[in-house]
Image 1 (cartoon, rainbow, N blue to C red):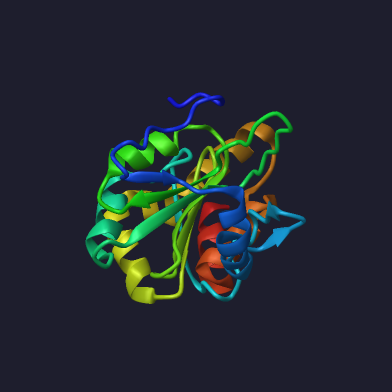
Image 2 (spheres, rainbow, N blue to C red):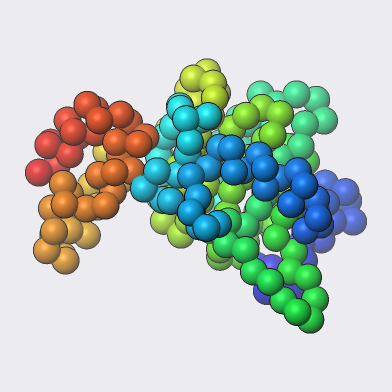
Amino acid sequence: MVGWGEQPRHGTQLIKPLTAKYYEANLEPWLSRVLNRDDGQLDWRRPFTEAFPHRAILFPVAFDIPEQVFANLSKASAKDEEFVLSWLDRFFSESEPIQMDWSLSSADYEEYRRAASVPVDQALYSLSANWAIVLTDEYGVVGTASPLTLAAIEEAAGQLADPWQFILEVKSVGMREGFAVSESWTTELLKHVLGPTRAAELIHEAS
């Protein structure tokens, strides 16, 4: 794991650190267009704007995507296309800059895992291919402008993209803590991802 004071190795140029100025000029405007954020904080109930209407939940994942999904995205990417990894939680230090953004070769999963190993909410995305995956400690949410891209990601993810697995986990937690799935904030996320009709059907089945 990369520690808080370390940076992922990038001598191979498969991974390149990006500066804070680059983030502000190039990445922040793009992320602001596709992510729902309030004062810089991602709205995990509705993480994507209408710019990315095709969505899916990945569960269970923890801060990074599975290798088969990364491989699928790499296979579908244009030659020499690079992915970007950014921390969604932004940290600032007066003593020295904290590395929070990287450009990654779309062909190297291990370099991606190395960069993604710090346990903070983060996003993997492609500015040119118009998709993004936001990730927290238990699940991820995919957003894209293309239904074909979403279908390919869901196929590669297999059971990890089955929303029923996510709902069952919410139900299990609710049984322990005394709330129903329909009373959980995750109902907003399910409506956001699946649409209100399908979300209501699955929530009803879980009740």
